Amino acid sequence: MLKHINKRVVVVHWKRFAGTDIDVFSSLKGFCDSYPIYNYHTLTNYLSKKKVPFENDEIKIERQPLIHKVRRPDLPRVLFWDFDFDKIDWGRSYRTIMERVFDKGASKDWDEMIRFYGRENVISALRNEITYLSDMTMDAVCKYFQFGKEELKCYTKKQLKKGHWI
Image 1: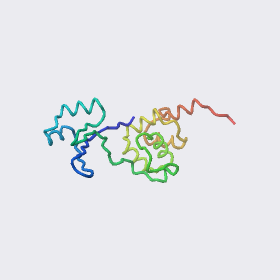
Image 2: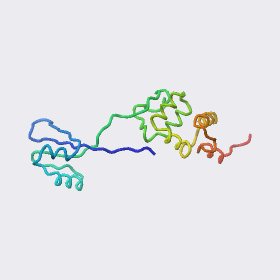
Image 3: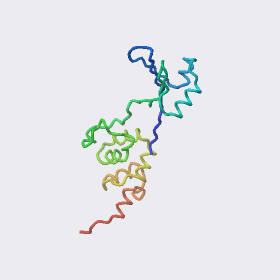
Image 4: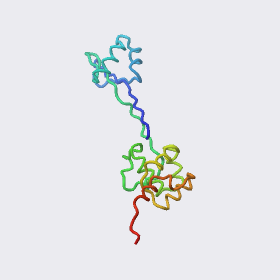
């Protein structure tokens, strides 16, 4: 459901200097423009086919993933008391996070979750993926988003699992 962008940078290790002299370039083209003795087409073919660093006596060139600052919603830690909050994968665990925020969060937490994931993504998860919400939470979600319980996956799933009448 949520999209990830895989960006890479070019890391250049200079061997001629003692120590760890490293340059980082946003693209291989940028490196080759700065150091014309290195041919862009040769390096790009080498790095894309072999999937190993290019290396000679002077230099080692490799592509590395760009590490982004971790994005996360501004939600209270107390909502996730049973998780290691700093290790939550906010992209991969979106269903669990949404269930928890809907069930235990305040209205400002709902707003923050919707801001972070996007209204359409939250509605899509409610309609197609989230399999459990309490009856009280289902009522609140339907009122908030202006749709009937029948549109919620958790409601239709609950109707299929009739419990004992006692």
